[in-house]
Length: 64
Image 1 (cartoon, rainbow, N blue to C red):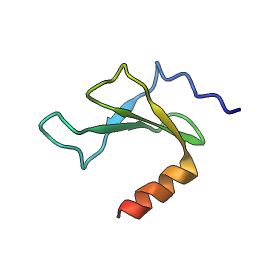
Image 2: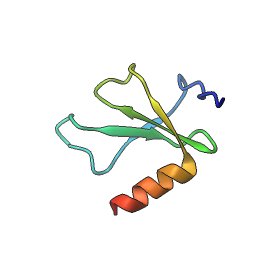
Image 3: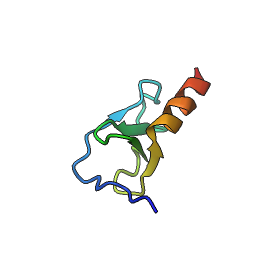
């Protein structure tokens, strides 16, 4: 079983493609080797999804 990293000290950044009106924003953190934490900026204290870095790279490439 893989454990999620402690995210309380994560530095989050918003997607450059996110809505500028404050809604529909995805944030990620680059602070954790091997994984990419993802969260909804409208609910920063809510759950985060932690994705393997390679899988995240594949996902982002597929969107381009």
